[in-house]
Length: 513
Ligand code: NG1
Ligand code: MG
View 1 (cartoon, helix red, strand yellow):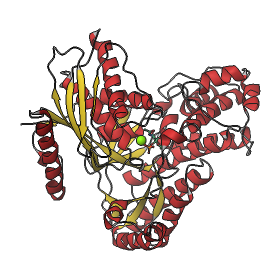
View 2: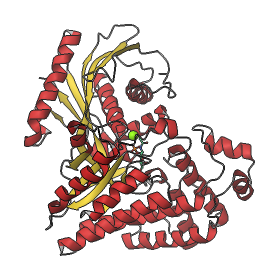
View 3: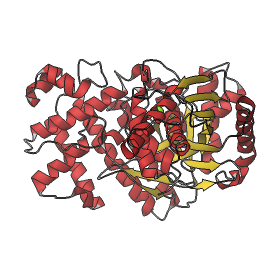
View 4: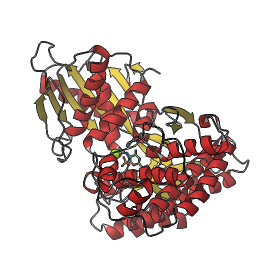
């Protein structure tokens, strides 16, 4: 698939959003001219995303269902003279108080990123680094051209809507275009952005980048990672009452960079260890296959290998939906039986079963991205992953063959989302009291389904609400959550807290004419 190029704003933004966006783009291009004394040559953009269902299972290589939102990150670019040695990057932001202007040289060798420092341009550098590695492979020796850049983002940072992916995908796209790659394969761009973002210190899966790169306006995106990255657009059926997805910020900042060793990166390790543990407990003869998951082997790899050995399923990617559901149901049972320790597993427990030393265990699973834990909650994490994978399949089936009554559909979808929230809170331990409260308030005011979205531990929540209940839900949050918790909240911040999400379009490149 190629990235479409377009020359006018009207091609991306729905009519009603145009005046606001047009103003923003005008400021972007005007600031560019002002700062660099020449016009920008092109603008790259990628959106944030909201995940509808399939939480914390992308890095176990199970299917997920996010959609792009209309908030995005845009980057106006001009290439600097090609004979400049070493080439330079000048990068500014419309929001210059929060994101100060930076200037640096592009080194001849590897691009260094200090992930311990919370620096906004690290996300640009991770895109630059990823593209440089790719083009080095393609072209041999390679150093990027220099670039002058002005950018701006409307995805709230640390708010669970994947501002990071919007920046990394936009940056990768911009660096590719600046270096003359004018037909850009979206799959290549996405795979590149997934790996690039890990340079910033979080050992993430690929959902955010897929949603940011591939989404089409008006539909959600069903993302699969096996046998390789693939996406399908999913439209929401027209129903009465109409469905709306509403996001609500908890305003609890989820700073993954600080919490990664005890939260996100630890979950990645726990899931990978659960796969190794189950494979050993079942005496699988084959090693778990190497795959694209962050630590190279995954619960999905265990899943496929298990059914290959025990039930002669030679290619599980060909399993029907109902066969896959049956398989997951069996794995849930097996996890309950073979990972019995509710109180978790120590390193010694795990080493004992896997037959490795603690040094080997740490080296294999915990060296690239260090984690801190006494106990690894393998049972709970695997149960979350398998049950969540099942919920995603059921959610998708409901959308493709909806019950004739819109109310039934709403209720069934909502029930799945609510169950996800319970599992995130109780099994995956990635919710927080504020997110739980937002969900409870919404349900009491008429939401059909409510849950956290994104990594959790703060950030954002998503709610399936019949259109005629949206105002009531908003009012409940305003009175019982936002004004109570934050008595000084400004009207502006309140307006940003709750958004009725319209599915937006994915990464694009615009020539400035
Ligand atoms: P957030 O923190 O919301 O961007 C993260 C991961 C995803 C996925 C979700 C949980 C990154 C960049 N993204 O999203 O890959 O695992 O958590 O479903 O870390
Ligand atoms: Mg992120």
